[in-house]
View 1 (cartoon, rainbow, N blue to C red):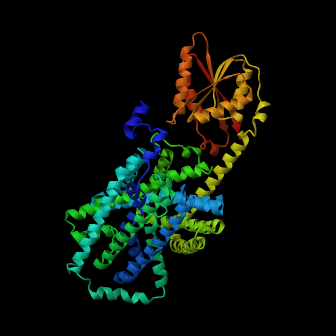
View 2: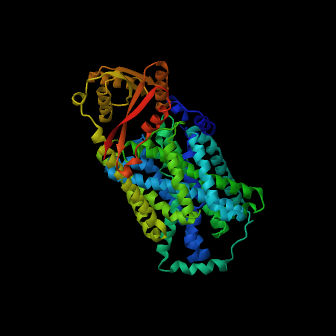
View 3: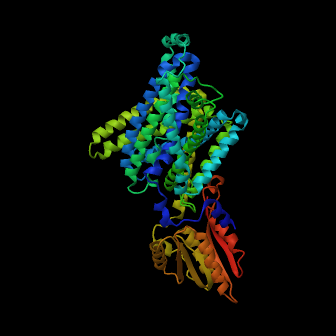
Length: 616
């Protein structure tokens, strides 16, 4: 029943061989990986004006566009640098892999922690911004803003749990519709302005703020506004992190998506900012600048005004989908290196990293309710984590070219060196300008992630050292060869836990012994069989092969069939179980053995018990 309900909501279980069909091409890769960066046009300009306007009033528009232009130039540099990252590390991982490979794993973990925080904030900020767009059109829903943001997160989680390909189609079409909607607003707005259909702002209003341009604090004000506007750069790293999600040739497809993303962001971000400046849109707490711009261009009672609002909600919500596409893959890579729980390595029934998706859902939902659904409260936490990963990636790539050289390595090293200087400088600006507004919270959370990841790595290293058998010869001395009875021992690999279980079975005197394995390939099954044969134990080795990652179900079916074939005999199943005593470490290991034992305890003529192997 549970499997039927799961299939109804998420779809049928996919085989490993179907993975290539689930990956993105360029057409669907653009909306999935570029939606985060494209969506930033909905709030980046507003964040700049929120800093400038209280001080400069209408004179803010004199420095607004230059700041936007500086951010777009920085975007161009980052895109070129991440193109080199894709070439150097086509296996994905972006900043994490680049920093770890060139500056050491601890630096890589720092980049990984920053990226994890960034992606969690991406989901929280995007869902809150989407809720803000809804409340801008329907002010009566303002008290329910956190619940609206939570509903958006739930929808994205469900869509991504259904699988990579389905989520790309489900969320890809609306992204293209948003792009068309914004382009139509830009064209209409520019035509109306050129035809003199926009009421000009009175010169007196402009003059009121112009005196502020000469104050000593102008540089700091511009830097603070620039730091706020750098939220437009979030999502640039997404393509380099998710290269394995593209169809072959993955690096070429990834680079095309990267450049397409940059093009869309430049056109829409600068175009929207230009219209905001021309139409003199003043930031307002009760409505977003994009909604006010749409009202000025199309009229607040027009259909297109509501179309812009709906499509803004859609793109802001789908910006979070970039995180759902990227973070689970990144966490799987980090978990494969032992810095996160191993459960994150496994693909779910739909060939996605479902545990990572659920982790992202939980963390982002908590932030939404803690910050009461306000994107303005969350944004100061946002950019610092992004630029930590930017800086570590560029510095790592600079080291990479100096070590490995290759064609035009001096030019590439110079580009990444300049990129590291630039992103490092912006990082300092962001931290200094936003520290008291909330950047300290993001830095504290990133540090916590780093410490937890290092603790996890230390634990797994300890467990590995305790379980590892250096050679088959060492295993021979530990085997008790006295046997008398009938038993099934599941085996996945030759380690100390398995040897202890085997010793227990031999000393119990079973008359017949079966070592049973469920493998994903014939090669794996043969390898395990050769290792068992080398031990010289008198037993029968049997195995089954499955590509559906349903190892537990296959084992249960085998035990049930064996038990039903017996008449007056009893069947014993002995399973090795890893036991960790530290409370923190318990959450890092599956309880698969005990779940299977509870299922087998209901089978007739079957006795089940575990042989615990304790790791302190």
